[in-house]
Length: 513
Image 1 (spheres, one colour):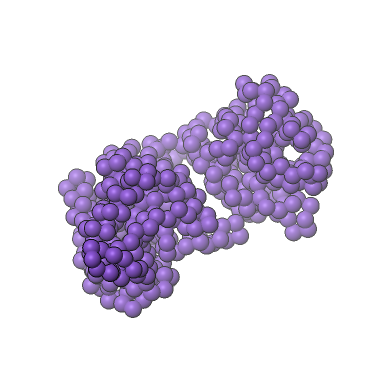
Image 2: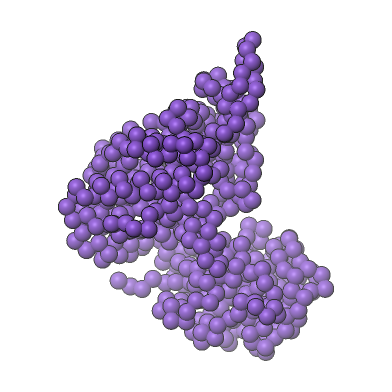
């Protein structure tokens, strides 16, 4: 198999590092994020076609500031430093970086000084960009020329064409730099010489080969949740090993309304996969009895999932592997480390017991959500399935604040179904990335007819996002929210109040627990 063309992004702690990777991948070039102090052997082994140095919160002149490994420059491939990355290049090569007289944060204009340079060729003489820095390049290293300058006289872009080293003080990866994607495109294709071979078909070919190599002649079980990630993971594994894959769907009692029947129909009848349905609702409710602490819920549910899988797998000859739909944001947010703190454990990669009898197969581990959908379309999966909103592994347990009981699940299922149905009817389901109802652990006073009530509160949550790393609350029409609220209060016994969550991520998360 031909080695994959790879652009390496060295992460210096910027909030935009993952966004750089997304922008590069949107241009059909595979980008891999590595920590800034990655071992030189690993960097060399990837044989990168180019390297991007991300921004970061530090100042290069601080004693403990992250540095630039000699191995990066020794590779001889094009290097693009963004913000802190540009300042790092400057300092490492003998230039001067110092605190700016005036800092630049937010939108600004830069003037292109070298309009024929490959990095900026064909772009307008003045560019709208997004700046976020207090330090600045006071003197460029020998061999560099200034490509662009900001309104305040700061070096906004520089280049050493002989050594193929480049720097941008602004952030081309953010939407607030409208032509930033064009700058990245020029770096990738005109400077690095990328072919742009990161396509769904190429990924499918490479991944199925990798799955076959990992699994050998063994059998695989795949835990289906009904969501897009596990569905695409199952389809990939099925393409690789065929009938040696058995999909297991666990009815936990914590699913959305009618979800179990929908999953069974899709995978058994439409896709023709071998499917085992396990009704384990009583087992999960027993484990969760009296539990209110969110992390304990996740651990208990993760433990039960794996034990159910292992139990079912023991009944299948030759099964040694468990496939699941872990995706790139799951890895970033659940894994921890110097550049990515552990945020949550309710993704697929979190909540698993330390001792498992099965080896994990995670074919989507390097994909963002939109890439997963592209791969699913290329595999021929139904579009309706691919555009289903994400659903957390622990199910409604993380959307019920407080104790999880069959009665509270039934109440939440009904409210959630109303919300999603009204979103679809109004044409907003595809316009939101994720939407759901949450059952709060409080009750409020209400008046229904001539009676005073003291009943449950439902919170509605709907967000828009590109990558689920950050998200904004969906600005749904008031008329739609009013209709949803009216239906829930009138059709779901025990609810007398509905509220709408207008928190963004960050500071909030998408899920409530």
